[in-house]
Length: 189
Image (cartoon, rainbow, N blue to C red):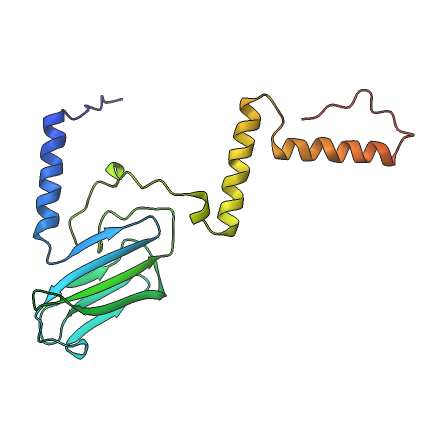
């Protein structure tokens, strides 16, 4: 097996600088959260929505000004929810306009390394997400996280997890319903 050489701090800094330079050269800016991705693009102030070409598909994106080469055109690295994705045109104080594009990620558990596959990539392993509050989570996800946190605390205290406790409770109920049976050698797995 070949040895994997860890990059030196200088090599890491150079890679980050190159990545930042490539992103700065893009005609648009983009940010993301784990659930969505936003693109902003400055355009001339005299343009209106009808002067733009914006085509948002599940795995493709086309964005530009009519009768000009597209500004963004290509395959998305992952699927989006088209019906939940939007774009708006906003006037800015500088006299230009800003096209704001919001893409709703289909998979809310992955970071994108680029907006379209033909664009320069960023290193997603360097992303440090904001801490979220339990109250920010939707119902089913929140319940799952609360259960995981409870089970973790139970394990730390040497107590049964919620699933283990369910099994114990079911056995106890069964014992009460069937007092004629001998459970003295019963084991919980």
